[in-house]
Length: 250
Image (cartoon, rainbow, N blue to C red; front, side, top):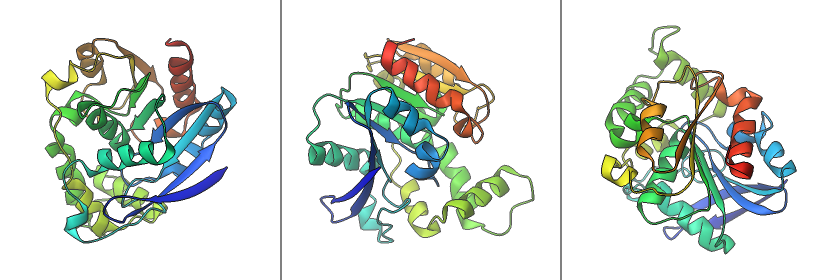
């Protein structure tokens, strides 16, 4: 495992972990999470490294070991996508694969909308609604962050807050991230004409229909794995599905 940081145009330090050698693959984690929890802890990164990939895992702005500014000026629309373009430039990448889970998947879609063209893509933990109508999911998390300590035990808000505590997230910075969300229209999604695996837990409907998303993509393929939005991440099938799609397109 190697780690390094780079500075974005607005001076934010982004922390990046790398594992393995070979074809570059960028893995983008979910909201409230970070690279270690999403990709390293449960073995997905190691599986990809063993398959011959150079696995590149940034902590997104306001997450993990990257900077977590509170000033709204550091949270313009689409900043997470722009940060990944900065990472690609920093690393000098020209041919790579791109994978994102949940917020990471939404960020991947925004990168594609802004002209990014990887060889293969995996959008995971994400459905059509989560890309085309970001307000609903943003509203859920805004309610969580503005009512910490008050959710009903066992409710979705309670579970989200419990996860936030495990990752040590900064509630103020994470609220700012919600202001950066941009909807991706159906017409734009249908223009993503490259191999895209839509990998989603079979019980995960948090971001709408993964099948509807896969059906819209010209080269989309729906790949179901066990679990819901939270539990799919901890199961080996997620990493296996990502690896198999990137290696062989199956």
